[in-house]
Length: 358
Ligand code: G3H
Image 1 (cartoon, rainbow, N blue to C red):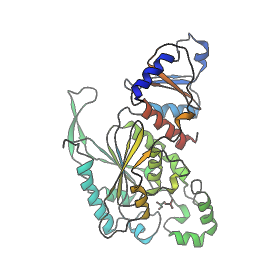
Image 2 (spheres, helix red, strand yellow; image 1 turned 180 degrees about the horizontal axis):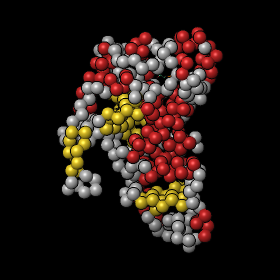
Image 3 (cartoon, helix red, strand yellow; image 1 turned 120 degrees about the horizontal axis):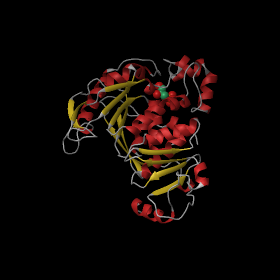
Image 4 (cartoon, rainbow, N blue to C red; image 1 turned 60 degrees about the vertical axis):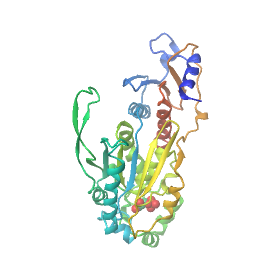
């Protein structure tokens, strides 16, 4: 059913939660009312770390949709040697990919269908291989209208690189710089433990996927907050988590997703599904991994990771109103009836699943 019609139906049966003290019970509830179009929020009886995290996440959700482009760095010297981690530079193939990526950005990210400039962002990790992959992407200055006063313009530097530590590759600690064969031979017990539980396994003096999930949370909040198309040049482990967030994969699936080299994955979250488009920019002579075939076959994936049937709708007083209610496990979430309400709800559900394990 069309979302707007659904909202009209809800209006006959529900009314807003009261925050004026007229209904004693409701004044004890924990709830949040959001009108993202006016940046107006009512936060009631919210205490504690987790609730406040939820409020922060919801307040930063955007109401316009935009695309993200995810890519790993070009082939690095360590990739070529089969070594993990390190901070090596790009090989000749890696540099060729960096050039192809810059052409892709020119054609697909910084220009709209009408050929006009579209303000766009570029994020990398702080590691040499991602910064070198970004080196051919042009930074031109364009003028764009101000959001608050369209009669004013300001300057915007296209694809100005921003390097985030949060986007650095999962740190393999004592195993950094080794091949998988060397790890298996020198640390057989560690190898076995990682095979049993890749999500929770932490390398000696290094990180686990759960650590990476924790450090990526600010990145997801910033991705949700911004309006412009964004290219992230990152690493396999971090991109697995970001991809899992937008496509609704669970925590346990995330460490096993394949994010191949030489590929740009466009992720376009929408109200019902997240559209994923994969572009292969493979430079000649590089091998194509099996993982690539896997991604090519999953062009569209469903976004919802908490089935909506699990979301209960509490009966409140009968009165037409401009709001609908959903009761989530921890908080009463109150979303104003706009078409993107559902997209925001899905974002929230994915966030709960990945970042709060609820
Ligand atoms: O260099 C390390 C990889 O990008 C992470 O892969 O977690 O499957 O070992 P892995």
